[in-house]
Image: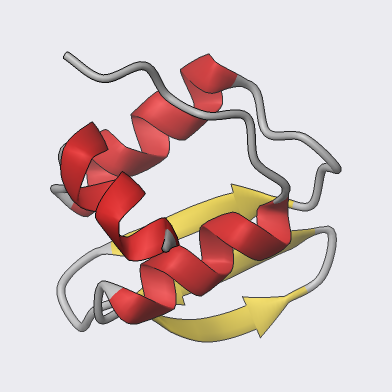
Length: 71
């Protein structure tokens, strides 16, 4: 299994957009949806690995898929 990278919220949002998610709301957190799921992304300079893992689990993405969308 590939290790999760440490990324800022901007990079995470950009990768999730490539995966088909769109932004619903922006504030202290960013709400994103793909039509059936809602994800909440905290606005942190570096998102902790445990938080990112839970975001990917909620999004239905594997670490490998997410890394592919980060490029």
